[in-house]
Length: 633
Image 1 (cartoon, rainbow, N blue to C red):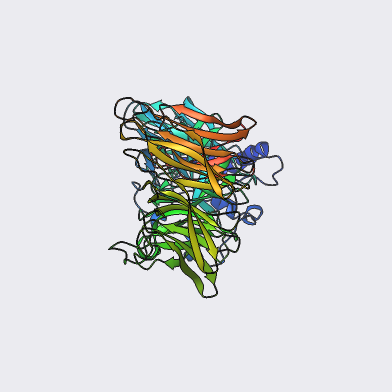
Image 2: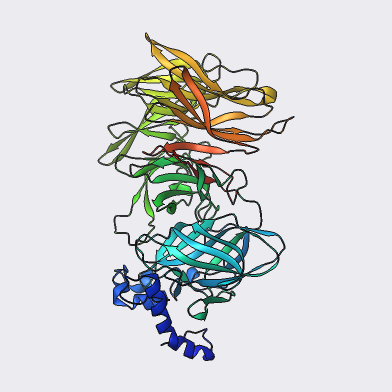
């Protein structure tokens, strides 16, 4: 047996005996195994029964190694994609040297130091080697006074989020595994983090990446081994705004503001239940990302599909939608600098690479569909929606012929996408600065604008097409009072052609109060009904950032209230507006006191009735979250 580089001479006999010990442990842990589970990934890659499970790259080995910065470097390097609230970082990720088993009866332990007293441990990140196609869903994590034992400060099975996988020369996916938990408060000193009972659906071994970090390390069946790649985080509060778990509410991803992005803005969902969304910051250059969250057992895998670099190809994406073909479409800043000294904006799509993907997470390719050309084009266009023919529609708040806003259409052609300005607002009685557009059941377009109209605070409008011409009709003039802006958004239509939306009116002390309304067609006109409004007596805002309609015709949304001039009032909730025999009933399936629930962007609901959304901040790292409200607890 080859003696490992950190093995002491006195341990040669122990390593000789080890092959017998492993057979006993593995047989007791998995009686169906034909051979003993190897303690290291490199050993497994050499064994036929495991090598067959690996997806060795077709290209040369040199081309598939991890980037140099991830295989070498000083021990002070952090794992990629981590925030700054680091208690202890045992980097870097080597990725091509070896890794040690954390299931089938093996316990791998690493030491870490805490510098100050009463330091709270709230999360951890590890580098793992996984067989191709595997996803680590959970493992038993403990924090103890010595390796594999001693005084136990924490011992719990935790769920993992998997991201940033890269294929190494042995055919393994080397992945970042992140977990959040309510850990112990530790005083200054040295402790051990232990991993065991790792769970993957395939039942394959899971290996913890070794490195040259300063930590001491051991395995229960081997003794002293090289240190492993990990980071312990905490030192501050838990989720900075809201609970990570409360009844049937849970946070399914906490953004770090680094490789996975930060400040997410809404989610979209596909037929398989995968979530997609943009982040406004982070991702390397700080220009944001587009991510995918997919189910993995009881947990979720985050895949950073694309990282924006700014400039011509865009950045700070405004939102994404899922097209009929599974391609993602969105709007971003960037493009041409012809718009009053600013970027005019781009419309893009993201799609998987045409070459086969052999890793657990794969980057997608960006295609710029259209560059807005100037200030009278639909510059900084956003709010995309599809019609049944595959045409895209959107709004521009300050573009158009009068630079008071526009509605545009993008039509796919053989040579690319062709743009048309369907309507340019004047800012007068027809409205201005449109904020949202939808394709109605009757083929007409419906939208909202936040300026102009009879009261100068916006309108709900309809665009009716006839050939190449579109005619605007104002359905409702949004009223306001002494201070306010209307901020109209979240326009929805149900199967009976009723329109639903949200705007704001002034509350106490220069604040804003949200109002949810319905417009119903009746004998050629539209009847306005107020369904619900926020607390107008607060001395701070009480608004509804978003809303959606489910298949049963019920409305779901979120509320955010924050403290104002005189009183301290912070609370948030998720609401439901349901139609019953007595009319519309307002309820709050989830609410919190002393919590500012900073919800943002579009909501989504899956086939099981689970509701998903984002917060632009909050979370373990105050960089935003993706959350879920389960239909059943």
